[in-house]
Length: 290
Image 1 (cartoon, rainbow, N blue to C red):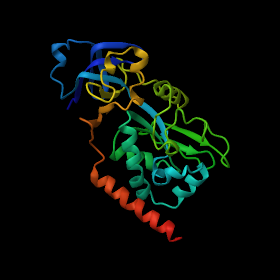
Image 2 (tube, rainbow, N blue to C red):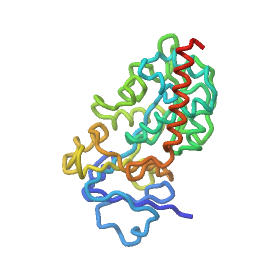
Image 3 (tube, rainbow, N blue to C red):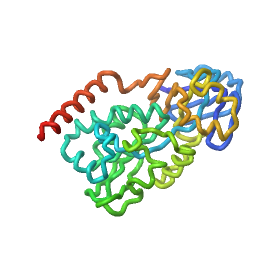
């Protein structure tokens, strides 16, 4: 069965240029057409039609994130502290603890996440159960591992007591989203450029909204506050939609629609409640010295 998505918007920013009153047509996870409206008749019977007036369509972001360390993020844990934390927990616990971080990243327009992990099992399980695109981010002082084709490759992270690595813990976080900033993109001058640099470092093509590219697309509603009327701005300001607290309305990663009408479709209240319960248990164990 062919799955098609039609997105209309006041502005489509392709990563290279603005298309005013534009549209994007996606079929089976691949962008088939991009252009100014009106939408051709043969594309109007899409399986899913999203967007509309006041929307800004931009490329999805890539990030590296220590999502499994979400419960201790406010402690600003070092890389070695995070490794110790991961080693104490089961794969199932690490998966449950990662879901709030994945949720937040998706709601910020992130479609490709390099998950910090000691084995490839965590990003693989997230890819299978939650959807979206994942790679592995391996601490350089942990055991090496291979990744399966389902993942988008692997990078290594080095830090204090954990030398080496392609990325350095602490000095590349303008392009890496971690618990240090509570997954916040604030203060980053141009997160799209930072994201594209990360993709290049990982050997991935840039996320562009162009014919033939895999769909990695974020749709923001700027028809009302916050960021109201941003769609009427110039290219430089439109590029900053990720950091202006505009409402993310939809997020598409390949064949997966992760967010629709501002709601995450794969991570629900039950998942978040399970994660919160596990966080409370871990906190009680730590306080009890166990």
